[in-house]
Image (cartoon, rainbow, N blue to C red; front, side, top):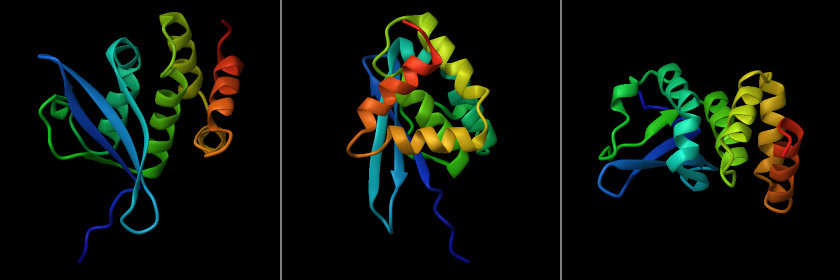
Length: 141
């Protein structure tokens, strides 16, 4: 029996001597991949609860999240969509309060809402504009 590849992968990359960053990759048709977003630093620390929850639900232990990990974490679609949405929405932000507001709002969304906004925010033509609208909708400046 062949193993079915999950639609999302979370790749880890080292930063400096002690930190790490993550890159969410979506599997497209066949074997092609599309990098969705990279995150690191304070933003990643603030939303780490989403990251740990995604790993737990996907069958991994949070202790497996190490800066020197070579093998990507495979994530089911619903988990990858929700994690991608929070990573995309918080990527350009610096204010911790806004990051927390968005993180909390994404956690409370239904799956349908998350899929809708994920599709909008990853659109090749209007994705950046949709990301800004999504951030403004969930958190004031």
